[in-house]
Image 1 (cartoon, rainbow, N blue to C red):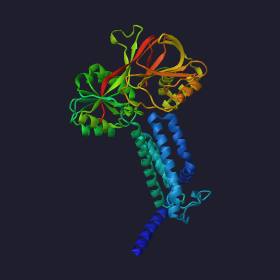
Image 2: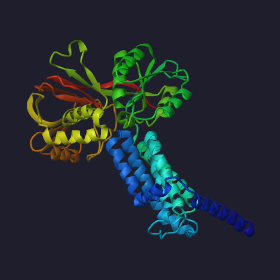
Image 3: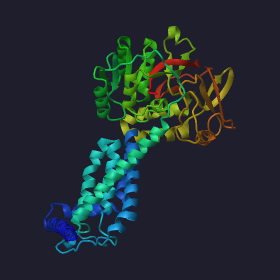
Image 4: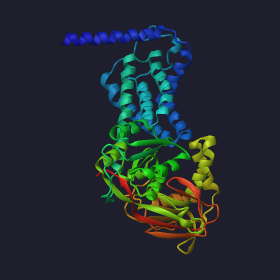
Length: 496
């Protein structure tokens, strides 16, 4: 048995050396100019750090999440290779016989050969990126493959070193993605919303019409495949842009249950259509952040399908924005929000970003919009509950947002029927005040920030042209409006 093992190892080593010699002896057009430089650029992860930074600046929100996942995957792969892999096998570096001098690195690596750290980092970065943003992953993959190949081309690794490193890198990408999904699952803890006894079960999906926003922030293929497999009789309507609202209204008028596949803004449109038509809503999370779905306890299409099959649903509250300046007569102009409403710094930032994004891209537009708001905006003077106020931000959440700090917060439940009201007082500079308010946490009182909970708020004397934002959407605020909470207003499917 020992002799067989030695023979197997010897055969593998012979093939490894034969392939190494083949690469060394072959002329690769352009290789001597490009591949050694590419390998040097990947030293210490510099190439991948620069790539992540570039994607963060010019990419979408989904791409930025992919860049962060890619960087975390690279860090995990690098730590594993350098602490366990290199010192467990202790394989010597290849003998450089036959490798042209022009290809050799100026300084030979001093660590052991197996596995290849460069290949692991390249594969981990690409896998982490592709799992969140397939388009960017496909764009980066040829560069990663070239970096991995350069390790054999320059004579510093055997082919098996590269293959093993790449495999470990891909595994690191999947491991980080699993940790991210687990964290999302931990966040998506169902609240104590009241069960809806009248929600129909749809064993095969008949009676369900799902409107899919094709411009949503995540790839739709896998999610729609799950939907069609579990609910084969469901009708699926794909649309984008100005077609979405009309499709929602039409679907709600003829379906037993209105389904929506998209992000928070699309779900808001669907909730409005379902509320007006008096039908339940089925949410299939398809956006970048999916705040409403996560707070409801939904991670992916499987959760929603399971609830539809069993007829399990809850009643959730909505926030309502009613114009009080004559523009909302007969119910027209009334808007609803599932997550939050705001006037002040955030709508201004959103307004600038939407204006500049088509010209310079989403990332640069967000940076430029933040700079503009923090440098040039003035607090909004308005009357709140009969009292004049000057505020950098008026925020109203549909339910109480938990946690402290400047990161996004979740809600313990969506059936509370209260508005989480926060006001960041005007005066001073907006940046320090907004940051101090964020760290102050919910329901706190400070010299710059006040928060409370209530069912209704009257807002008057809003300057003409002031923007408002609700669930990530942008609109012009009326000069007077009423905010109120509608308890148990909407039936939404959610598994128990």
